[in-house]
Image (cartoon, rainbow, N blue to C red):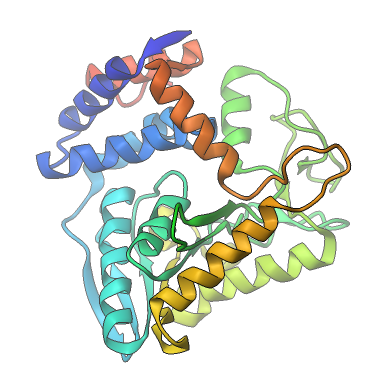
Length: 330
């Protein structure tokens, strides 16, 4: 169904008020999940807001730094709402990068956010190389295995240029878990070769799926494993099966000050030239090379210009229920 963006925004804000979200945090939360929706990331947009909103009342207070060592720090988010705790972690990473040249923040005991890239992009717009990643429950596995043992372990990084930052946002699984959750709710099929059943066989049946599949064979496995360590044992956080809830899930935010390489302008010049070189790459079909983040940005602008969102009826009904104060309707 087609719905005015303003109406969706109103319902999301009303949901926050019904859940007791502090007034100063409502706009940040709504904007974050709407961004995922307007960029076509349906599993991380309004549907995820509806799912996560059932936990908004669990927050125990504002995040706080509980351990520090030079450029590194650990944050106890105190079950804060995901976009709010991520905002705290981004600011903490930037502050440390100003002092130490790099800021590396590990965060735990937080609710989830939607898409990763806005947090990395915020660091890039402040002149830093920004990297954001997190783990999850052991929901994914690798080709040939039956047992899930890795988190879905998404990664985003953003690099400043003289224009828009170069932004990458990717899961290390072929498809995010949000796709599985929505398929189960709506009775739709899963993407091909993205999920496996308990025997390790690919399935498109959401009720048979037991694990998400890591992308890229053994190379994807190696990348996911690095993220697992960077969001787990590096900060003494749980990993794999030891991640038993939202509250034991680890997040990492990294800000790197590029000025040590000469100056910020030197860094920006190099990145701008890199983007220009990619724009000039010859392709077999004559179309421009698909530069990471470019298509999502164009879609976002087009959706905002239209003033409307295309939302599944079932998702909109859940949103209406949340706005009425019902956080159990599914």
